[in-house]
Image (cartoon, rainbow, N blue to C red):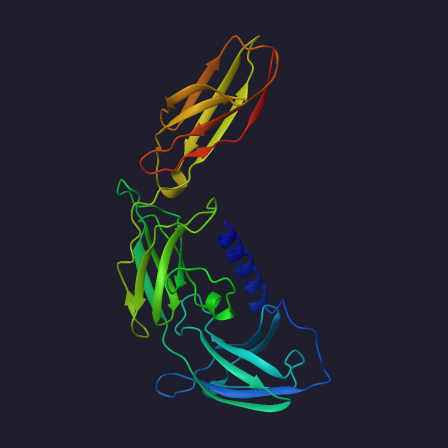
Length: 316
């Protein structure tokens, strides 16, 4: 989700917990801080049902509830709010949000704090597709859009995570991201196996609130295949190994490609091809005892190279 992707995954997870109200500061009942205000659209009309929260740093979080009729909110004596600088976050928690997330930095004091009107903008959408080098449409590919030029900040603030765009391709290779704000974005296709953010990306701009940006297409994307090996020893000095490669989860029925087979650290077969994603290898003349096998899948037009699991076969 690489140190950048791992950090992204960890911080997104922590962020999600906070957004669910599971991470809060310790209550400090001795100081009472109250906040009130109104959330309005571009025409100054109050909006009901938007989520209000307050955040400070990586750990301090306070759920302030939902806006009421007329867009108002009023929280009195909330224990987790203390004097100091906070970021008020207004978000639309629907799966298909009508409004993008908005932030307002405020300095709270003990007692009542009138925050005035907070204006939110209509949510924007980005649509596109992900295709392999052969032109095949790729399904079940996660797409993430980072605000700005795609650089992961060393010390991201809460607004960075609220501004991320997420999508997943369907069987036609298409994806759709909602909840975007006005600004520049950089989209990547990411996989669980990735160790860092890929260099291949596409940039797009959201120019106006409520805009639908089309043509956010990621092309030439190679997918990480699933590669497995298993084996038995059917007779003295023999081993039968079954090697498989699959990228079916991404819509590639036959991954193709070749492999190198290893006995321990020694390569014993080179550039052997697959037939419909599988290959059975029969080995003879092996000494009795435990033998460890693995293979390196060399990749294909649409798939990356990858190492298989290791297996140990007790040769008779």
